[in-house]
Amino acid sequence: MKYNHQYNHYIEIKNLNENQKKLSDSFSVHLPKVEEIGYLFRAELDKYVHNNEYESSLVSQKVFEKYKENNFDSDDIYPIGMCFHITKAFCMFLKMSNYDFIHQYISLGGVFKIVWGNIRNEFFQTALQIGDFIVDVANDTVDINKPKVKISRIGEIDFKNFTSFDEYIKVKESYHSCEIIINTYIPEIYDFAPLIERKNGEITFLYSYVLTYLIKEKNSIPTPNVKMLTKNEENLVCDYFNEKLIEKIKMINNPLMKEETINNAIQFFNNVIAKKLKFKNKINMN
Image (cartoon, helix red, strand yellow):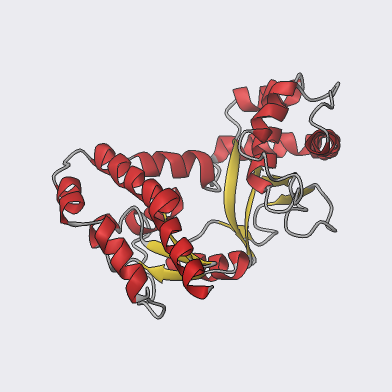
């Protein structure tokens, strides 16, 4: 399944095999240099974010442009909430760089990947896993007063994979100031959209590789609904996911095609349909 590959490849903090542990131990002597590079990179990225015409002698324009792809309106809040995009740009920068010790480590099979997880049951965070270490070059994306770069050994910091729905929901509601409602309304799409978020008068279906992973691999079941959709919200959801659409989904036997169909339907609902309810609620309040 696509969700499993994507979760393992892009999100999961990996356990190391014996060879990877040896490579990690050998790489540890380079961590001070990695920290230095991280600070240099952030200094250049920070300048570019606030001045798109800035040309760096260290970071290629390609890396800068990759960062900006989905962040055109983020300059005013940078770096708050930008951990994924900063980390992704740093990962790309290292892979394009001429630092031989990094390329050698990767070529020998060392773990070098972007990871996303739970910090202290308070925040979501994206960072790089290099062997047995978490390299966070976006350490200031929740609190700008914190150092921009932090390197820690896995297990010595409270940065971990999510293992249950209740754990995920607790962090999501607190960190993103929203309400989470369990999707008992359209069970046919539950495996790919088990949760509904309500925030600022708008509801959206949450779909994520980690949520499907929790269902399929961890057999996690969230605590039954306490929060519910309003009648207007429920009608909107059921009118969109009507019998015709549900029947179409049921008839798809190919798991990848079903996953893609459901995700496309959810994206359209989130981008178009849900906004109608928000607009309607706004009109009713005036």
